[in-house]
Image (cartoon, rainbow, N blue to C red; front, side, top):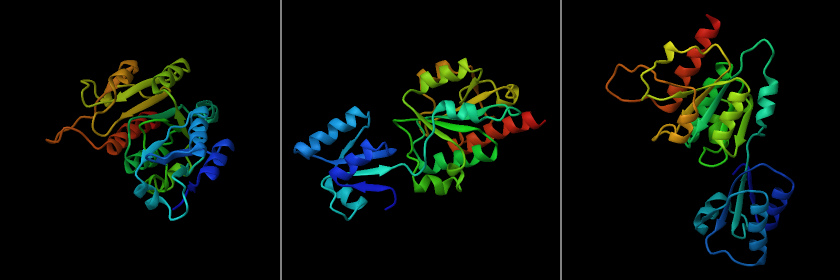
Length: 242
């Protein structure tokens, strides 16, 4: 399997060499000084691990994993400042912020639409977000290798930073009475897309400058999050080109 490191020492060395780690799995009930040292190392580098049955580790690798397997990132993440500084002077900034999108196909689908719409970056939380793995890259048709992706500890703090930088933060939610066609999206914009089942969290929703809905005529109450993101993104394109 791609992007897999296994064994206590190899995983520890990967952490200490600042490899970008996506997930760390540790066998339930694993003990010993080396395992304790590894957990301490994870805490020092603020990396979370998940305790799993040994069968999960055996599915990830046939190698001698010693009770620990790490998945490294399939892409190189960037800082928020990198995204903002890379925006060409003659373009209006556009970013997509993920709040709880955990399905890799949806994540990849949104990345594909964002890249096609000329968005300048994607922002996702460190926790409760789909991993950017081979499946996500495949779903994005390779867009995740082209569009910058930033992972942040706090979506709320990041939105405040974006607002301080002059961004208007808009939430995609079917609960709003205001339609996307009635909003001015020609200014620097951050589009927030929520979890597949619950939508955008209340705490994040409160911080958004506007809540916008996509008009739906059929009987189903909401679009798939990737489809909704595409509609939002290309309304931005329509307004800016027009």
